[in-house]
Image (tube, rainbow, N blue to C red):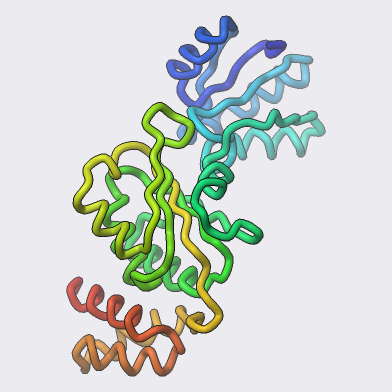
Length: 253
């Protein structure tokens, strides 16, 4: 390894990996909380001829991992940046999900705030490409519930857990089935998860954004079933998906 310094998301984990490979190099942490503050000093080292290696705990740097600020700064400064192909949860999950891979969209983690999250789900409900999401263990059951409500419980999906690690496991089924499985199996909520969801079929792809706008207004004066029926007709979205969203909105009031 020719690097003068290894930039690592977690130096302890990277030290273990390097030790297993018989490599000894200086380590410096680089993560979401300190990357901005360290860019200038790292650029000076690079301009002085140092070779730096950037690694993340798992997966690929910059793909929902640190490194974007540094790489952008290096590119702007004319510093050469090279990539060494390595593991990526996105492509690994697509390879084992058993869903179409000719066209896909990667959305990373859904927004944490409830309002932004609902808007994002409404927008993605009519996405026709295969969808790839990341999710943390403690949120997986709730996220599957929200996905089933927004997309319809019959949508095909897969959950790839702990990819390329000792306890790797892949769960396949509909969003409704996976939601039930997450509620029943503790192991499904252990370790980082990559969720792969089939795209919306043309016959069922309506205006999800219109549905998301119409339901709260209709629910002010109508019960969930009636509000869902009208919103479904207005938006072209499946009535079942409209009802699941209406029921969820009504329960949150």
